[in-house]
Structures are given as structure tokens and as C-alpha cells.
Length: 181
Length: 167
Image 1 (cartoon, each protein chain N blue to C red):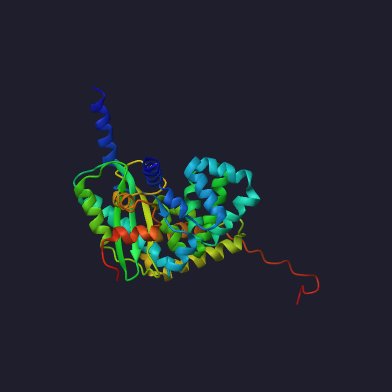
Image 2: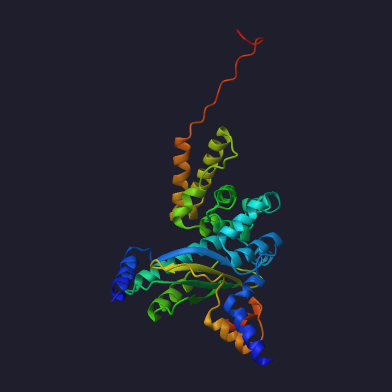
């Protein structure tokens, strides 16, 4: 009896299960973290792919809203091989960088910074220019980000995209009634 | 015979590798606890980056380029107190361990409130592979659990292993 208990305790410690027990309170994130621990990144991404509306969309929403466990999980899942899932995690993290840049940048590896410091695909051209300028200004106004290696890499990525994205503002065609005024 | 090329390859790979590669940050508490105890996510993020930088300096400070993968485990308690434990898959050189613990512990922590905030950096030293383990279990923590004779929740664990009177 005692041996069984000791073995159980040792197994529990060795597997880090106490961490699983203390993981995210959110049921979706907890479930995904457990799947990740048991089956690896690609299995979780396949699972998310097959449950897009029920699992991927809510996870992306939580990540974009800077829920800490969701951000941490999305960073890990974005290193997978499933292109559709990787794209979705990337989009969520690009949205999150606009809301909690310091936290997202602290989670990623330096070489990953340009991937996340970029525009979100759903933005239109004008919104992209506006949002990139806002994010650059936010970095400039934040001494911690401005001085740090990741903050600088992030700013450089935004500036590059801003300078290489042509925003075309078309003049509206004059209406017949106003022409010649 | 084949050990020589293998050891040469490992050395060559260590020479080209980054001193510290951060594979991820493992948050060891539920979101609700983190929200309660971390008044500023920005401050926590800065601290994580500072810990990473300190670990890098520590690894660079040691002449030994030991390839290893594992966890740097950090707890921050109210009153800006911090403590660091290491949990690597292979036995880490004593000097490297001491350097990492000393330098990371010297990083001024963020303010935590109502209880400890515990997280771990999953790292590789000199190109060391990412640990397959999900979460850390430093030897001091294992000893504390064994001594307690039961599974400890994280707060109880930190209280037991801190070895310092409460503030």
C-alpha cells in the first residue's frame, strides 16, 4: 500500500502533473494544454483544425484578448506544421501584440518577433497603415520596449511593412450634382 | 571509434549555438490566480525578459559550454522577493548552475500580491534540445513532496522550499 503510494507520488512528481492540476482555469485552454502535453503540437493543431468554430476560434479570441495562458499556448502551437492552424495562431498573436506587446514579446523567441509584429490579414489597407503607425508610436512611447532588443525588432518589422505597403487612397468620383461647383 | 566524431560534432554545434535558447514560458498557475497576483502583466513580461538576459550572461560567464536542456524555475513573492531553482535533464555543471541562480536571483522582481507567482523558462544551453518534460520538478521540490508524504499544491510547495521566514 505504502509502496503504491510512494510510486504514485514519484510518478506524479516526475510527470509534472501537479502543474497540469494548476494549469489554466479556462476549460478550453486547460483541455488544449493537456492535449499538448500528451500528444504534441501537431496533434493539437489537427484537433483544432477539425473543431474550428468550437475550439480554434475561441482560442484565437482569447489569445487576441491577451489571456496569458492562451497567449503562451498559441506561441507553442504556432511552431507546428499544420499551415492552416499555424496561420490562425499567427493572426491571433499579431492581434495580441497590439494589445499586450510586452507580454507577447516576452513569450516568443527573438527570431520570431518579425512574424508577430506584422499586420493582421483581416485589416484593410487604410486600417493597416493606421494600425502600424499606432503600434510604432506605442513602442516609441514605451521606454521598456524602445530600449529592448525585441521591442526594437518589432518596431523595425512594423516600419518595414509600413514602408513596403502601398496604401492607395482613391479620390471619390465627383457626383453629377456637385460637378463644376 | 565513432565517439570521437560524435563528441567533436557536439562541441562544434555548441560553439555555433546561442548560449541560451528560450523555448517557452511555462505558467504554473491558473489564469485566475495570475490575474489576482500580477498587478502588471507588463512588469511581469519585463521580468521574464530580464531573467532570460541574466541567464544568458550567466552562461556566457562560464568557460564551460555545456549542452543541456531544462527549466529555470522562478517564484516571486509579495515584497519583491524572488527565488530560482534549476531543473535540467542532465546534471548541470556546478559553476554554470551557480552563475545562473546568482544572476537570475539578482534581477529585481515585479510586485506580486496576495501570494507567490511561479513560472518557468524552458531553455536550451548551447544548442541543447528542448526538454520533453511539460513542467519542471526541481530536486528541492521533489524532496519537499517526499518529506510531506503527500502531493502539495504550488503555494504550499513554495512555502516549504523557500526556507526563509515569511515577510
